Amino acid sequence: MNLKRAIGEQYGWLKGYRTSIFSDDLLAAIVVTILLVPQCLAYALLAGLPPQLGIYASIFPLVAYALLGSSNYLNVGPTAVISLMTAACIATLPPETRIVSAGALALITGGMLIVAGLLKAGFVMNFVSRPVVSAYITGAALLIIFSQAKHVLGVEVKSHTAFGMVSDLIRQTSQAKPLAVFTGIVAVILFFLVRGVLPYLLVKSGFRAKTAKLLARMAPILIIAGFVILSAVLDFGGSHGVAIVGAVPAGLPPVTFPHLSIPAYENLLVPALVIAIVAFVDSTSTAQELAARRRGRVDTNRELLGLGAANAVAGMTGGYPINGSMSRSAVNFSAGGKTPLVGLLVAGFMALTALFLTPVLKTLPLSVLSALIIVACLNLLDFRSIWRTWTYSRADGITALATFISVLVLGVQWGVLAGVVLAMVLHIRQSLTPHMPLVGRFPGTEHYRDADRFNVETDETVKTLRIDEGLYYANARFLEDRVAKVISENSDVTDLVLMCTGVNHIDASALSSLEEINRRLKGLEIKLHFSDMQSVVRERMYRSDFLEKLTGRIFLSQHDAMTALQPEPDWAQFSDHIDIH
Image 1 (cartoon, rainbow, N blue to C red):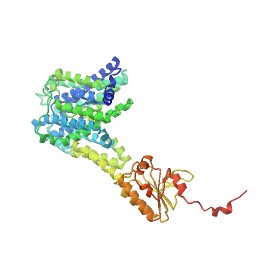
Image 2: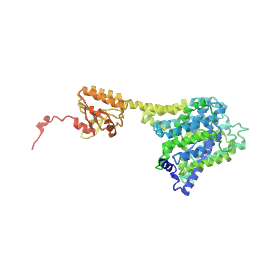
Image 3: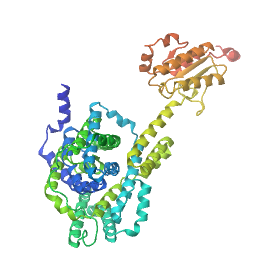
Image 4: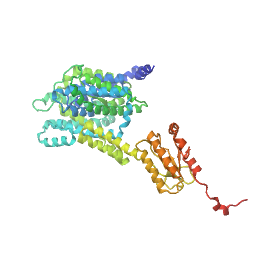
């Protein structure tokens, strides 16, 4: 029954599928394919691999994701960030093993994602904060821009860190090839114009805004075609010495298992793990954003399976690691794509490209492909987000800044891990010392707030300590110290109330600390009480004998506690003013 329901959820889009929906999907597939052809070549170049591998990674992997993924709009395939991570991983390997190692890397990455999906580990997405993702993408985009400048200048750069690349580029500026620089700069300008100015001109010419935007998305393929023709006519690769794509083998990708030694596979485990994390987080973020625009949702566990299957298939069909593309997915959404059939159609169009169009790409200058990558990455730079994070939260700002710098200094493999680890360390550090203020009442109300921040009423004999965090083994001792400090600073205390508004769990270690606090206060003739305790926490406490030993009571609300515990006023001092009629 569960299997039947799962199949129904996976392929529910087939019910009621109509010709009108197919026409929308077909149009979206055509637009995405036009965008994907130059991108897959450029990203294979970025990964340090032959251009046909970008095409191979854009055929069967799309089929695998369409069959297993949960998003109707996500387009998987080669992307800038994952390509750069692949390049950094295989760059130190012998040249003759790099292609097969890239396939093995995709296979391992896919295997890890599939295992995570079977274990329903989609919750891992919650451990990667948005500031880390944003800063990581910004750092990686900047790194990609530096890495592609070598093709625009026509020089060699061997470093994989930002400072090393800039140093190499500056040192070799005198060796730059003028024609490569010229074509690269012109291509950058043209790509910028079709992205920013062309939609405006089309709208002014009478096109609808949506149509104008789609036409502008398709324009880069015309620029690519123009440079292919110009390069062929003027013989850029021969007489002028400009680096070109060269012969691209025609045909469908080979189906083969990447044959490497066991030690070689072991060396790829850590890079594959990092790529799997980045691919999953990046893809799922994009899928969730697009689904939310149509009031839909994605299943993170199915995303793990779909993305894992796509990578595993890429590894066995001559490709390299892939993930969901933010730009192509947005184009799919904007073009009116409705169902996963778009991915299947794109795969079909890319198969036709592999069979018939690859010879046409032979004379394409590498500087033009680099220009396409640079323009795409400039749109990924988001320094404003890092600044907003810094002004809002210093802890998150430090995490984002550290992630950004780590990507530039250490490289893309370790930058995201540095950010994730630092974010978790800072979160744990914050939970070690949770906010536990003394609270008082706003006069004439039932509202209780932090006594250090507001002008509230307090009582010398009844003190209330509000706990703003769940209690567990790491912060239990901090609670003991905080209670001890409150008691030492207030000698007249007879009752201490722990206001548990923010406490959603109390583990065994924290329970032991509460027992110790209760015992110490009992020795000082001070009663321990609780207020505003969540029912799920109280129910769990009934499983122990703590409540039997508790010297005080558990009150439903803080106001109930203060009403019951505060001593009655000395009405005698007002007796002369009582007027009895």
